[in-house]
Length: 439
Image (cartoon, rainbow, N blue to C red; front, side):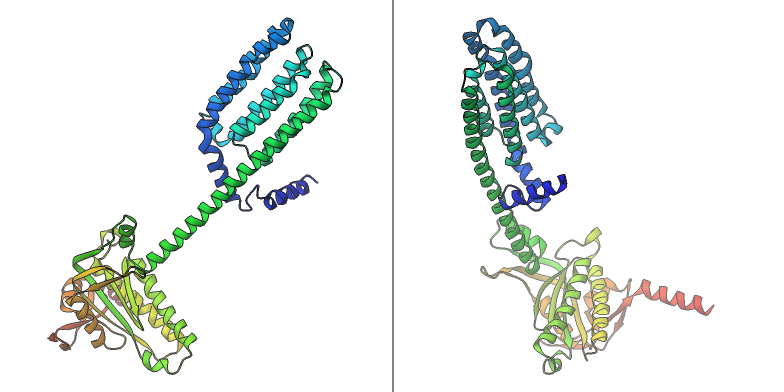
């Protein structure tokens, strides 16, 4: 029964916009709506304590004979509770439960006022003023969510009626007057708090939507630009151009793709190309290599644009990227049954890199090294990774490289090139395993 009532109330609060359906969003709202106003709440609690106390002067004017008693109630009951609430907000516990602290102070003040008006002769003839100030002041000064304020309102109304009936010190008809005045205060205060909370919730929703939009934009930028370039754009740079002394330039394309275009439907073709390039992207992220662009069935990437994980030599990291990407793509092609293979060119050299375009910015690289890598790729055999002599001297101690005949590079002439076959460590491991199995 209780659980059903809770669920009903929760659905009603969601429908009226007084709570978020997602608990995480509600926790974030509570943090922004409540904890950001801790300092202000402390100030108002201290002010409320002072005013609650100095009203003992009015008590003495109304009933001098009982003024000392009400003075004690205010000085030892109401004001200390409010000051204790302000002090509690200096602690982490108080900050996490700011609504509970405020409602505790409100409850103490309400009970204290009921006691004061019960002691004073004809006290409940004046009670409406105190209760109205208390409730309207609470809703105006303190951040309390409407679902908790409603409970405080019912408590206030109940204690007002109970105190009035218990004291029985007001003139006839004043019970109705007090109830009507308190109900008016509750209505105005609750409506005011409701709209203030709805405004705060709407503002938070807008902020979250803006954050999501910024995240989507950031994800889009990261998908087309290197991480460091995105950071520089966020820092305010508008003209991004660098001269990079040494990077590893990689070109890859699919041998047999042109013939496949005539045989496959556009959907199947795009799906196959997307699967292959996604695998390249996955391996590139693994080894700290940056994809630069794709052109048709060609894929361009650069190693050394950003620092490799653990500070590893970018030439070696790029070689590992190529070997693993080649192996993964071959598995994909084998599973598909399509007559495809990947050929790759890899060169190390200086480039000019920068962002071009405003509406659709793109990061690109230029230089003789880029052209060299592209021509290596076009000269590579299907399924092979053709590397320049520069790459050979960087990899020869840790990788197996096979010298090929001199390649006629357009615009360069005959040039030595090498096929990157495997890692030396992996080959030795396989060889040792074979020997062990024979033994």
